[in-house]
Amino acid sequence: METSRFEQYARIAVVLLLVVGSFLVLSSFLAAILFAVILCMSTWPAYAWLRTRLGGRGSLAALIFVLGLLIVIALPVALAAQSLIINSGDLIEAVRSLLDRRESIELPAFIKELPMIGPALDSYWHKLLESRAEIVALARRFAEPAKGLALALGSAVGTGLVQVLIAIFVAFFFYRDGERAVGLFRNAVSRLAGNEQGHTLMMTAQNTIKGVVYGLIGTAVAQAFVALVGFLIAGVPGAFLLAALTFILSLIPMGPVLIWGGAAAWLYAQDQSGWAIFMLIYGAAVISSVDNFVKPILMSRAGGLSMLLVVLGVFGGAIAFGLIGLFVGPVLLAVSWTLIKTWLEANRVAPETPA
Image: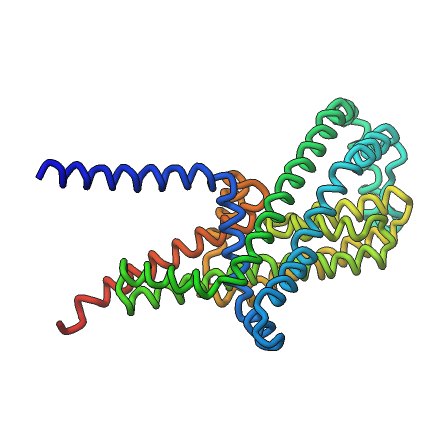
């Protein structure tokens, strides 16, 4: 009897040691693995279609998808990291130079010439510049810390790029052996929740992941594309790098405004007032409006998910997992909330159902 109990405790101890050891080994890659799962689940129908077209060659289809993910996700992140690290110094110096010649910062001529209010606005603008000399001097003193912050941000994006590359590498094996892994996971869920309820939970989680991922990444790609078109039309230098930054910042509410607003400010500083006005109108009417129209349509598959969860997931995921958490955080919160809501609704209906 004592020997049998000792053997039970020994088995439990061995299992716990294996679980803890495995977690310690994989903890550094946990965010990347979760991101790989999210990518595979959201793109699996397209992968299955391509695999069928290739005669069932799963490895070749997985390789093609991985190369596509490198172009769509890893390349913009790499361009963003390069832009932040290489060009941050030039940006800070340009801002510092603009502050040094604040007297030359004039309102556009069409504003000065507005009937009745134009001269008053111009006079107020000059008074504002003269009275804020101390603030301008303080801003110049903060130029160096801001430069360091930009470099640190670029390094963080570079670290996120490494995580993205690891996730894409893991995704290759998930694509190739995904059906076997899904079968094992489905059996585990069925044992815990029952066959019918387990299937419902799996489908709910899958639909939620697709809705959130399509909404976030689809909107990011759309905003980056229309931003690239606007930057090329206006002649903004580094259009592809700015589009890559738009792709990253589109995950953050009002993030793209920093990019196209900065481009408009640069155009105005270069005495291109007309193109600066075009950039402002194009940014507000086209780039930012993509978030208002495309994202709700794409995220409708998530079952009308609250945007509050998405926003909390974006910032909380970034704090917990770094750059890759911008993608992982919203999905984790969305799936958790949807599963809890499904469970609560099932328990509410259950007492009304005859035994």
